[in-house]
Length: 157
Image (cartoon, rainbow, N blue to C red; front, side, top):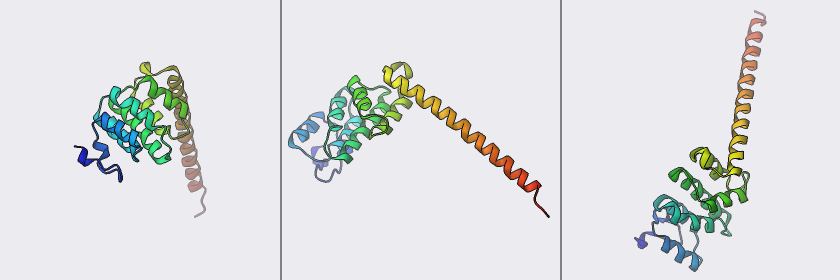
């Protein structure tokens, strides 16, 4: 299976299912470790992948760090939970950084009661914000429709 993993181009790394191979690539300083972290999230258990995803979030290349956060979001989607170390990394990065999509995935796919306190506050914040934004948009649509209807009735023939 290792022959399918091309660390130079990243080809085949989404299928990596051997955490030891990822560890060896880390030691060698290979590129595309973030991509491989997504593969681990897809192929391995959360316990096997978690520590490696956390390490990948500290890579120097921003694209590969972004892929590591995608791996965290993928882990949340597939496992419906995260490890305490993954929650800590997502909190440290914050909702406006590279972790934004991973945090949103976590809030969407992990049950509220399984979230740590910070994530519960983020869930409440996001829910209230989205509800208020929805009301605002619906009211803006209603006002726009009323304006258009009034304009059509008052139009000169």
